[in-house]
Image (tube, rainbow, N blue to C red):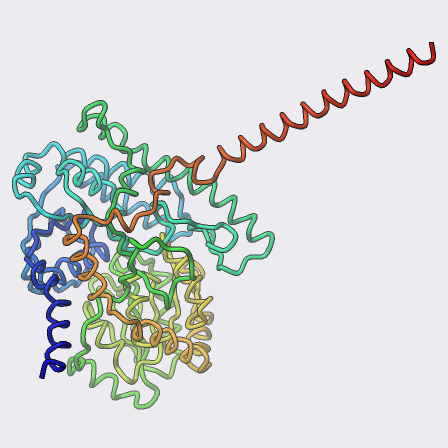
Length: 524
């Protein structure tokens, strides 16, 4: 009997710390951006709420850039704030200009700077707002912010609370201290893979220099805001705040990313948006059944693209779909559809669709996407091959990874022609190697020891229970750049070496002169 009790006692002892430390925490989540940024942070908030924490989500109320979006009921608390009308107008104008320029193939960094300046104005208003005092009085235990908008970092610093950060895009969009060997880690916007020849490494190095100049410019946008809202002597530096985060949750996965060095406080949560699939609504099932074993193609290009697509591109896409023997389910705002374009007979256009459920449908053959991270993660999870119409931001780089992993093909949005799109779609559907690679990626994602939800909740609880994650962050995050790269050591060794060579040269000269002098004396 005693032998049977021992394992039970050991189990209870092992569970006891978790039981004692499982008290609900007050967690504050924040995002200032709409679209996929909002959706990810909303899911983070809901997951933490479902696992026993008291979550309050704080976000800026706007149209969220999601046409046809159906908001699900949430159990977490919500606090919204409004920026002045002139700030909203400036942000929307700069964002829309950036999108339109991107659709025309002019993805300029100057346009990004304009958006960051608009975000800075909004942040300045928020930090002046009396709502900050209200937030401080809540005495939250932990903050979960989005690293993409630097305002969250300043809010966390104002509240004086530990924070963790989410990265809704792939690596490289932000510099937060990860080791990134340029020889095999592609720099953001380099459009390279981890297999680089000599000239690719030259390009990667030059892109690396340009990237750091861009980061410096984006950080400098917030310099005046920091001076206004923080006292001299205690003013934070954005690059330091990025490294101050207890954890970084990255919306990606090993099935998608190139293998690279990670710190212990860097955790993949790609696939967090996934939910158990349900049968698709009757209207979709009826449409899919018309095409039998030919199946269907799902087309979702993101809410932002839906709002700004040109009539010429719509015409080319519609013509391409007419050439396919499959059904096509296309998410597009029908009120924006040009009246002079007749929709192809095999196309069903809807303002809203259950994307997750359609991707899980056994008769899906292809997913045509803009290359957003959430959509790619869902496609990988269900083993669906991809044709990507990349436009701007991280999307071209995402599609480079999709092509490198061999489960999809990319076409630049600006180059979409009916014949090219139709031939590419047929190629990806008919060549079973794409499907096989997509299934292999799905296995990598699904077979990991912990689910994205378990990783998120487990690491949040770990930080709460241990009072922070200092034990997960290497000393490198606190070292100046010249120490990290041993430039001080190399400089010292160079001085010692040159000094030694100089001294040896002088001693050798003295010896030579002495020998020459001795010979002259003997001859005399």
